[in-house]
Image (tube, rainbow over all chains, first blue to last red; front, side, top):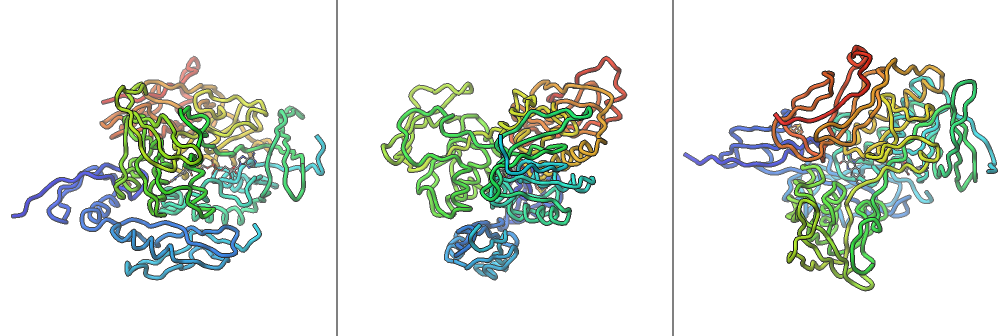
Length: 126
Length: 429
Ligand SMILES: Cc1cc2nc3c(=O)[nH]c(=O)nc-3n(C[C@H](O)[C@H](O)[C@H](O)COP(=O)(O)OP(=O)(O)OC[C@H]3O[C@@H](n4cnc5c(N)ncnc54)[C@H](O)[C@@H]3O)c2cc1C
Ligand code: SF4
């Protein structure tokens, strides 16, 4: 029989930030307390097995109204890949105009999710 | 003053952030003909354009969006609704409201590179100027005045919109949300963040931000610390930190030097109310924003207000909701159709609560009041509005998260006539 342990963490799936207490066995959640909605359960499962985060940053833009454009991962990606993803995103430089939702990098670092633009950006001058 | 032109509008909205945009949309939907948003920046969106992290729109869109995405959705709605935007336009002066035919109206002055100075006359106004950060000068830190000291929001704009990193080795003074979010952002951009130092024994920001901005990246959070001195002649070379007690007094023998080239100040926001004062509107001494009733109406009846100009919010969805309320009421006022309720109540802060807004009620419509608790309560507690009009059990209450109190007009109007005050408080169960 394997040992169970309790783990406390904050659900970051929404700004409420419920304090969760999970009884876990290895990477499996046996019991969960403190969540106010079902998303907390999914979050706790991922948090124990493989923590996931929505990634956001900026990419360089040439000739745009701003020199950078905000980008995000379409869906959350593994926390442990964040620094790899950062490095890839830092290499990007695009010409304006940019359209919101435009795919910037497909399947970033093999995570299965894309990096997309978070705003539209016209060409200079403002 | 001389102006090139005088413009007449029905509802004028000052500030094109989420509060102003939502107000303008609601005003159009309520039937106001000419609704114009005056925004000093080159684009609308306000502070959200630099908030590139996720965490917006969970209530309004049931989706977690970044700041710019949230703005984009609202700008589309504004376009559909027929809202006019006057960009690159600074409102710089406000006249006292004038009475005409028993109704008041507003007059103010704007400046823009294209059209110069203009005088705007509006049947009603929604104030939505947002807030500003407490600047470095207001921090009273000893030592030299080298380069490398920024407010966290300024650093956020540099990194997220202007595309440059303000420093390589960073100390954060304060544990407010902007500071926490910037800690993560600076790390992702290749800087080292030595730590966030906050004076209170609890973090000022949301717990989720402590978890996903500091803990995720192993950035230490020092609670009960003050950054008390700056070192360096041209560029910042380090700061002195000291442990403080509950009354923020330094504890002897705990001072130490921390090397860094950048200090970010993340300690508090102040509602931006110069124009509000010029109009002669009553300001709440505690929140620093205008006193409003359930219609978001100020002490000058043709002026309404919403968003961070009233009280500093942590979730933008509430700002949008409040903007809607203000915009709708402003449109009704412009049409001569706003009917206040039959009563007058002042809302008072009871045990363990502060900064309640709205703080006046007339029983004219159901109201949502926002407030914060003074100290964190990590156990069952009850939030109430006396006499007997609201009671809600909570599992916890924290100063970093606003609480809501909903009071129905029906219940208010049923109160005995001698009741003139509503008291809100929090009790531990
Ligand atoms: C750094 C930061 C992080 C945040 N993170 C989150 C989060 O994760 N989730 C969340 O839900 N909320 C978050 N918030 C809160 C939310 O963004 C704000 O509450 C909201 O943006 C406030 O909207 P507003 O319209 O009142 O003010 P603002 O967005 O500040 O807009 C005010 C506008 O008025 C304009 N203006 C001011 N004075 C004048 C003038 N005289 N003439 C013309 N124009 C003028 C300004 O240029 C600005 O565009 C965050 C806020 C900040 C500052
Ligand atoms: S459990 Fe639900 S309500 Fe609580 S923080 Fe997670 S997502 Fe938000």
